[in-house]
Structures are given as C-alpha cells and as structure tokens.
Image (cartoon, rainbow, N blue to C red; front, side, top):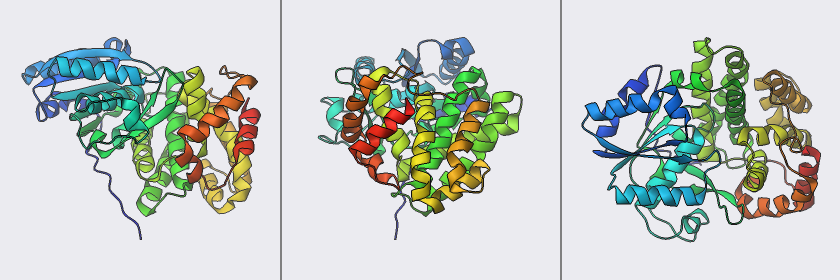
Length: 375
C-alpha cells in the first residue's frame, strides 16, 4: 500500500516565461515580486516580468533581499512588506533560495507568530498566499514541492518549513532562463538536482511514483549536467537537466532526502556554505560508507552514473564532480575540525527524518566520523 499526494501545477518548456504576467493575473491583482539582490536585474528578467504584469493591469512591489541561504528573518521581513502593501499574490524570480524565501513569505503573510514554530511543528496552518514560481536555476526543485529551507541566524539551525499550503499555485519552468548562470553556479545546482534523485531513490520513505521520478532525475542529470557545463548551446541537454531538477524536487517532496542533505544543512547553517558545494564534499564519502551495506540500491544508482558495481558509486561521483569543477572538501569550503561536534549534534536536531530515511543507519559517532572524512 502507498499514497501519493503532491498537488503541483507545472508549465514546462522553452519560452513559457512569456506567460508569467497572464498567469499571475489569474491569482491576484497586487503582486509582491521576490528575488535576489541582482541576478534578475542583470539578466533582464525582472524588467520583462514587470512589463508583463503591467500589461495585465497587475500592480506590484519588489522585495529583493534574499540571501543564498535564506534566513527566517528574511521571510518575516518579506511577509511584513506583503501585508503592508496588501499583496494578494507572490512572484518568485530566481533559484531555489528565492523560491524558498517566497514560500516562507507567502506563508507568514497569511499567518501570525514565529516562523520557527511552524518549521519545528509547534504550530501549523493550511493558509498561504498564492505563489507563482519562476526558477532561474536548475537545481533545488523547489518549484515542485511543499518544502522551503531556512536558516535561523540566532542559532544556525537550518531546517525546512513543510506544508501543502506553500506548494506554488503554478511553476513556470523555462529552460532558457537557466542560461544566465555562471558555469560554477550551474555545477553546484545541477549536482544538487542529481543528489535529490539519488536520495529520494534510496530513501526508506520512498514509494513507487517517487522512485520512478527519482530514477529518471538521476538518469537525466548524470548525462546532461556535463554537457550543459560544457556548453549552454546544447538546448536538449539543458531541457533534460531542467526537467531533472523539477523531477528531483517532486521526488523529495514525497520520499524526502537522506543522509547527504541531512549532514549538509548543519554545515551550511553554521558557515553559510553554497549548498551544492557542501553536497559535493559530503556525498562521495557518505556513498563510500553506505554502498556495500545496501548494495542492491547502490548498484541501481551506479547504473545511472555509468558504472556496474555498487562499490564504484563514490568514485563515479568524484569523476563527475571533477569534470564540472566541483570536486571539493568541507575543509576547502571553510569547515574546521572544531565545527564537527556542533554539526553532529545539530544534524540530529534539524535532520532526524533524513537520517532515518537513509538506507544505512549511522549513530552519532558514525556521523561524526563521516564529517571528519569529508574535511
């Protein structure tokens, strides 16, 4: 027996971003545009969206303060602006951080209290403002699930807000919007997408549909990421990688993540790592320590990575990472040995579900040792 409930509404394809204004108007006439500090301006996307909104007689206000690892305080600040400006719909223009921030803003604009209480399940609500998500990076898959990850700046806790109310009303996924990313950003977000597929595939919380999506995510991402990294002109590969990212988000939306994400969140919560680089440092050592204790699962993962044996998965990941300039360690990303004990304890605080999802069990000492190996 299994159940599947993921109410996502996705418009996918090259050129679909030309429909943003029309679709936003379906959900409201006063929009809060949520974006980062500069990329949407530099690419011209912000101006294009504003023009479309004005053609549809949708008024708007701008919130452009989202960080690479969005803060709980940022969501609260954006929600206050949405309430003050009497916004009825949100538009997220950016990568996963922007979409996550917009989800939190949409949620807190319709609710009262501290967002941390909702993140840790002390409070709940079925309400949020409608959100139109327009991803500009092919990585997190936030456009396809009910998760939004935030860091509490007071204590470094990095954990996700999870509720069906924050699933975007519609996600407009245009592969052509991905071409403005610098290659090093593409490498990071693309590897995040691959990890979503891997982790959902091996997750103990998986079920047939999520597993199907996860396997297709792995297949597409592993083949397309090196091609797109080599040339954005490979449109077919760009479409495949973009679709892989969305499938990955949908996969973890049902099956959850496993140990790599669970261990990365404390690292980037503490030291503000770029998420994909943290995953690049952690995933190969975790795979090395797990593959022979769940060989059938990792043999299937290996086939999507181009190898035949479970024991080859870690090295296959390293080969892929080396080819996209992303082979790294936690030490190279700013983590020090003195951070390991805090990260180990924090991992069990903020990522208990992901630890339980992993097909191989690790206790505190085991996770501590994995952090040390990743330095």
